Length: 359
Image (cartoon, rainbow, N blue to C red):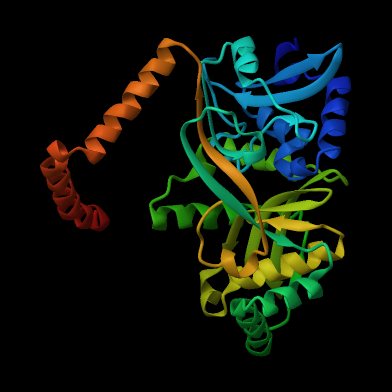
């Protein structure tokens, strides 16, 4: 039987950090920077509810289960809604006894929305399968472009033509892959928050701890892990910028932003192509575009990682309540008896929404 020890993030000593890195490097499925110990430490630096379960077998550490929990009973991904990958740091193909891990940590509910499908528990409450699209750059940028052209991805050619048009009409574009410019960092935050306001999404970079987390990531610069503030400029003017991170083989596309002044040139597409070309020259094998149905992703993606969303419920009052709430929501959504109420609700929304937009 495995020995499982719950540790606060600050209790992870240098020996355990080294073992984390060793296990990650031996498992190709854990190549994304979200699985790096540096990401875990960056979040823990700005939150006091980050923990890890250390799994041992025969006095040898075989896995790490990182999570955060505000109440100690419900486990969430490290970084919450900003986390694009979740899973156990361990050997490839290992079958994890999640019931033992959760019970050892006192966790009654484990929620995940980007769990590696290869690590999915046998029983998942409200399971949803999805994928994270990727750009395969292992053979270099030109080989990638050739592959996408053969696949009929015409938008990449359109972005390249717009790049040439931009440089004819405005000026030569320059890319700084690892910018240290504080003003550029602030601009990414400002543009991303403005985008959230336009689209009705919560301003997640104004949550208090999130900007601090990005700064913690930004300060890392090693072969194994680095924060990436990538800026595309014309002269001194920022055309587009992106904040992300990379491991030694995967760059994760995270927070792209652009200058609306140059909107007709598709600056977001130009940014991604230039980023891909630059990281491919560094030997990065892929760019992970993150889960989501953004219109541009099918044109860029030539691979994918299977993910699972759902929950694991342990026998408990919390688990029973969660099941009851799920059942009630399902009834309200599907029952013929509640159809008049749903219709009335949609009618009220239709009346109220224009007023909210004008407020």
